[in-house]
Image (tube, rainbow, N blue to C red; front, side, top):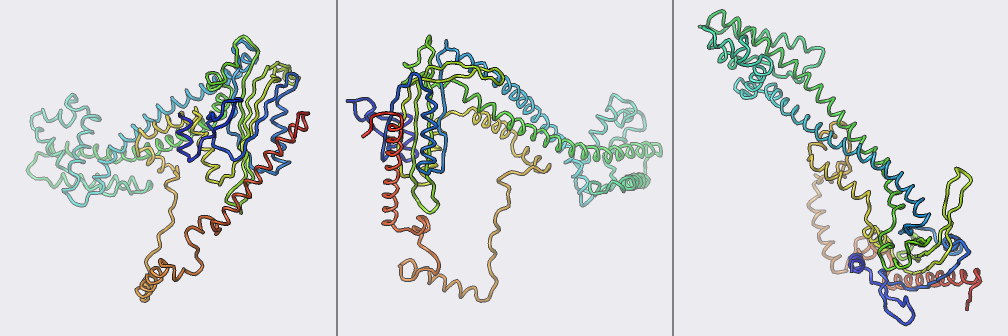
Length: 501
């Protein structure tokens, strides 16, 4: 049912064929072909690899097919066979390497969350600073200034616990008004975030001098209180302006570190891809172990099952339809391990039976792409799962991660420059041109006038060919693919000493 649903999704009709003599109309799970041939060979003492390479060379050199796409390449082996043991050893080596990279990716993703959290905290703190630096009047950003002064008293001076702090001194006779004066007094430090490094010391001196002058102008307060207030404001503004520069430098460094972290994750993903592909290829195919061919794999026997599927077609840019051959070979073999001289490694030599089926189609480019997409959707890809998990982790960080990476110079596909829209013309003739253009469209709709140099929508889609021409081209392609499939089938049987007619 799953195969039928996929075929319907990609607009294919399911093939029915007589797979066993006397039982017609069995569903195969493949798109219905125009032509079909099948060869089943039992070759006990012959290497069955020869059948695959002979057929591929005949399609490529004998029939001039120029495009090949390997769709399926899976295998399974009986658990007691020597081939299974060698394959599992190689698989475990690949899995260990992949697991190491996956651990590294997992740790870096965890660190990525911490870096983004740290940047959020820095941005929150710098928001207070910038709010005060961008004020336009005395009443602007009062809350941000009070917040920063509170942070300075609590974290730098130690709050009430420190007797020399603003709050600590307020407990002393004569200094109870100090906190109120401290939070009310302000010096003009606007534009501090735009000051260049070489002029920063002079800017700090100017802010502190203005603070001292503002305190000196206060009347009705004890000189000792004003003296302490000057000292506290000087310390505060020195701290405020210096820590802003430190936060700004720290933020830039953290963003660069985030970019480095992100690039390292992408690098590890590039390294892990070959291992995941090899793991997928070395693993035993579930559809062979548990499918309708599982009865041919006996645990105690030296046996192996393999399935290879290749889509090949003759691509001609001038044609809408292309002759396509879908080659499917199912192997049931007895692998024997032989030693290779280089490295003294053991490799299997396969002898046994193969079932080779040729299916011929006359497909367009879109149909070819649909079949490849259908087979990709049919197979569960480990790499795709990992990519989705990492993508989900990245998405959990929200747009902030992307924004920080953009600041560090990272580019994303969706941010590529779009084609600018055409600006409306300011020509005095524009209204008249628009009227005549509308009249032209009306006549074109009734078929009376067709815009010069333009084809109809249908002709643009079909490359300027009529329905009759396309139907003739389709029939020619069917004849070509019929001749190619029969020629390959006939020549294989003839050159391998089989009965032909």
